[in-house]
Length: 210
Image (cartoon, rainbow, N blue to C red; front, side):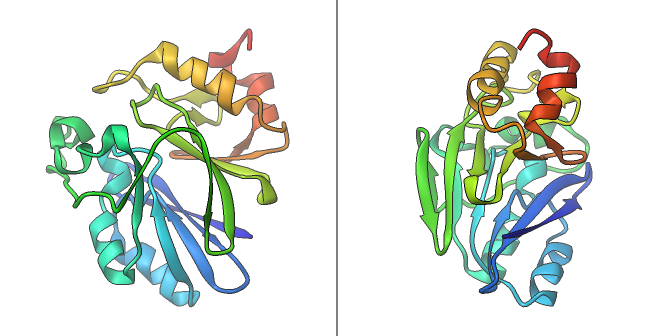
């Protein structure tokens, strides 16, 4: 499995395209600039099977509707944020001077830690609330990588000052759900460069004592 990081939108949120040799792919967090994201997918002759949302903040959903319409693929989102896609006060867009962002309802709602298979992709959905109530991470054991959304960054952690944020829950999520993954697990974060679980255990200043 291969992955591509594509920073998109007004605050350069990382979208990821995970692809297999058969040309199928998964899209994670289409934050904006739909034409740029679609251009990469078409240019590499990929077939999207689904859009996976780590959470529903505006900078992760800005191109959601356009991508779904372009490729006809369903979107997956945690049920705790099902109403956020159409509510700028919840997805945070009304608090920033970039225009209100809304999207149509998710096609599939997630709940609880679970195994999932889409096409030839097998992965785990891990609830990692704290940055937002319905934040999830997507762990792909086969490729030793986890898409952590805005829970864990290289040298940092997600903000918790937006609606529904809770720092205590975020730290617990990171400690109980992410740091228990193998240390060589690659972390694909919602912003900034990729990192590794082991690296964050050793040097992330927000995780001292973990």
